[in-house]
Image 1 (cartoon, rainbow, N blue to C red):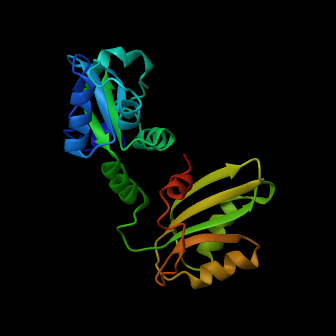
Image 2 (image 1 turned 90 degrees about the vertical axis):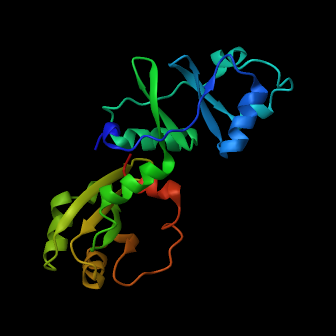
Amino acid sequence: MQVQDLNYASLPWIQQSDSLSEAIHRLEDEQLSQLPVVDGAQYLGVLSMDVLLSVEDDHMLVQQLVHHLPKSAIRPEDHFLTALHLMSELSWSMMPVVVEHELIGVIEQTELMNTVTRFLGLQKSGALLVVEKEIHQFSASEVVKLVETNDVQVIQLNTQPNHQTGIMQVTLRLNRSEISDIISTFQRYEYTIRFFIGEEQYANELRSNYDNLIHYLKI
């Protein structure tokens, strides 16, 4: 799914000719942490509240900070996971969408997380299972076979190798919610069960941890 398939937010932006005090008021009024900076429609970068509060003279113009602003952005044809990855790396709550240096919109974090939910099929019935195996012992065909021996189908399979630990993490979307027999099968074959959402919901700190969800997406 590409960025152009998502809903762009009508977030405000700030002109480089505006003062820093105007930018602060805009951020406070809209309860935002970042604002895109433009010159007309040309995208110049992202101004954050942290940067604004670090400047003593709020009568300065935004253009005096432009050369120091991060200029990360995405294009409409980029995959939405690219936007999610950048947003996570930068700790931004939105990501500017730019075409030929022109700001055409902004993707908010909430829209990306809703897209993740649809991408993983979390709104549908079925289980989400995350297992781990040593990289040199990992086989995608074995993983699928172990699932299918329980008369269950793999709807989606994502992998993330960690070469420092030598562990391959595998995220599975399955077409059945009750997965206790599948979990037992993986444990018999010495897979580590890292996380799951099935018919029986177990408390797990990873479930609500945004950074770990990004990790599961295998970006």
